[in-house]
Image (cartoon, rainbow, N blue to C red; front, side, top):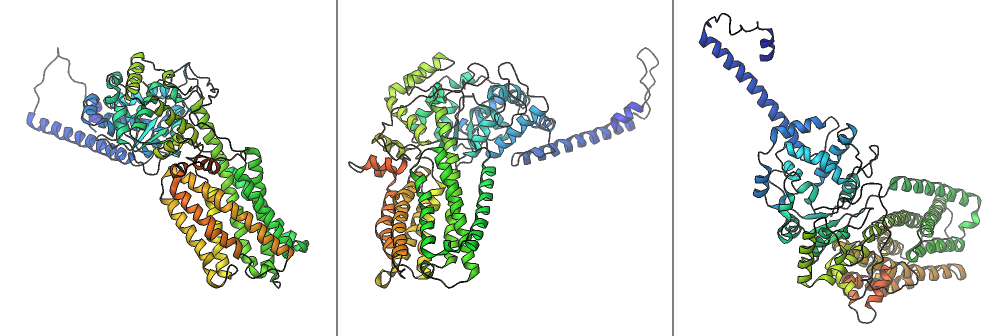
Length: 635
């Protein structure tokens, strides 16, 4: 309104013309003051509305209607006058971001690319249409982070989002060679369950200030302070080279080892996982219908002994993948096993529908129970296929960590020779060179590096893949140690007399194992799941198939058909599963003579197990990106 009244007012007289005296000076000044108050009040309301909008934005992701212009308006409204002073006032272990901050940052970068604010360069010719890798982090830092934080007073992105800071409990280490989408997706996908706030150098450090002054003494740097506060360290590999070819990443590994931190390897979400599972599910639905038709037109398949032989064959297809490493054969067996059990579900449903007199095995375990068991096994094949895809992704990340890494700290490089010399001298003086090299190798082989895994590796055990647990193995334990004996107890088809408690004992063992598995640390889950699957479920399935299949085929079916297998499971395999799971990989590795071998047996997928020195590293050929020469220096 003030601007409109000014535009409509007559032009002011020129200085060299007449100077009429203003009339009613007090009245005019009062009007001007009133207009000024109106304008000031409107401006304050506008600022408050922007403050409220972006205060809420700290706790939520970007809405579809929000724009980058709104964000820039927010910066000019709540900018900090002196970023350097703010970073001195807020401890460096509180320069952190949340998961929502990372999601928000990804959307800001994506929008900047779409609007032409973030452009490819000669050093980084990224594809603007790509939504999986994205522009490199140095490019994002120059074209997004620095300009936006400059308007906010030269603070870091983290303190721009959280002025008072938030305490670090997750430290993210990387070497700036990856794309920003790839980096954020990996961090969000592998974010540890107990972590809330993450220190990430590109967002935590003030990129417009003199970062070099913060790194003069590595042991007093923001990296060291944040890592000391954190409980977890997340290692983000990239396809260009191992992050452990860079001295600062080596230093962070040294500090994490010295302070006993849990170190994880981040991996990307499996591409097309939902589509693969959907296709597998549709195939199994077709197989259920095929089972119904088979039982309708080929009734001899419903003969008790033939049905039992088919069940035993299906079980064989589920046990073999536990020992096979070949990914193609593993995938084939997963699909075949899922389809076979789906067919058995259809045949069991046909028996339920017909309501014919039950004979043989069906007198002991009715068709309804077979429907539930076969359906559970079919679903477990989905889990094993998902495990295979996750394992392939984890192996790819491990190969990225090996690429260019010689296994020796002395070969790490830095953009500043002074930093390299200072860091190496500190590690050598500590006398922990070999321990840090071993910790990095444990991380590459196991997918994580924790005190217990490092202790097992030091005893000679190969802890490969110990950091990843199998969903399929867990489902196997739940099926065979809870669902299966519960069915036996319900239909009273297991032991009788004083041994009637056998199936109940198995159920109790399964529940104890499940409680332990859910409450134990992440470095124990992989070993516990493999112990349950390989040393309990697999032997039980072999014993049960031979016993029940033999009895059903060559003799009349007895009411106590499952007594012998259940007794072996309750008194031998179940206690063994619980003892080894609770002992953990480090405890089992300490068993004299057979400890390391037993760890190999549990964790390895090779039929012929070879003892491998965990300190040996096989370097991989790096996959070069079409991007610039080395921009991987995080310093």
